[in-house]
Image 1: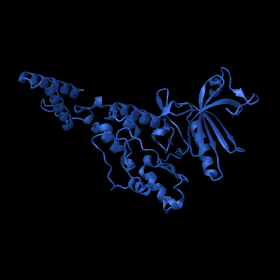
Image 2 (image 1 turned 135 degrees about the vertical axis):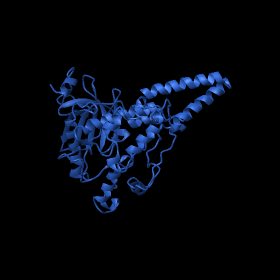
Image 3 (image 1 turned 90 degrees about the horizontal axis):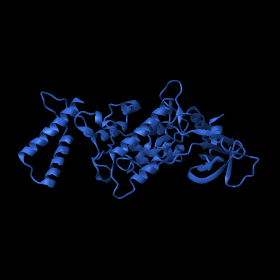
Image 4 (image 1 turned 60 degrees about the vertical axis):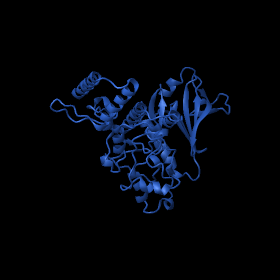
Length: 377
């Protein structure tokens, strides 16, 4: 019994010889009740559907148009093949059934249903005027995203359109969706070549931008790529916008992303004026290196030594970076850590007034002991 048969076995999905209504849809002879529309874009729509045993699914329906061409159809067929390859991978949305109707020029895919996507999560989390950057929130979803990307890389698959909207929350875990422009790496090479380059500009790598222009030797508009480029609504967990979101002109953005002379700004404060830990700034900088060979690998970002994901493993200095090695009974701390200690002291004085010398010495002994224990760890 297939996975789909198992999931719809209680009452069994209806068959095409049963009475149909406009609120139903058929996939390979099985009828599902169509409920809400969950999203749409381009030539596709995604609906929530229900089998007769009340099991919920997502149904993606693509309608081909005359100007889509063979490349578009191959792209959707490629998505199906990749999802079939990834069947059972718990960090990828599951494909249960699909049907290509050449007469009606439609492709229907029955997939796992999620609750919401990361773009919506970010919107809800930071929609209030009082919203502030939250390192714990960022750390959790950054870790989830890394696990998703590592999962597909194990199959030598490059997604090519990583953005918040393509990470779906399913049962409390993020899963990758939309493999329409993903590619499987062939012949043990790390390079991916396409007849046409598509992606979401705010999240594309510098080499992808360079590849667009170099592949034709012509301006983008003349080569027909303008229709394929998607700007996307900027969303970011730290600063509230992507690094090049302030560049509104399409061609200014395309020029700036791969330009090593164009400096990216990394403010000390994030959303709501909250301070951004130095270890997170370092991670963002590393991931935005224009030379891909200098960017950290997924495994390195997920390792126990990563200072942002595992600040508890740092030496004294916490999230603001490790301290120098202890020497001759001394504990050397970072400048940011010293600032934090002074701020805490000022706060204590404001609350209780000027402390006596014995109290100050007690504070010093306590802090020194804690720093020493951290250094030993």
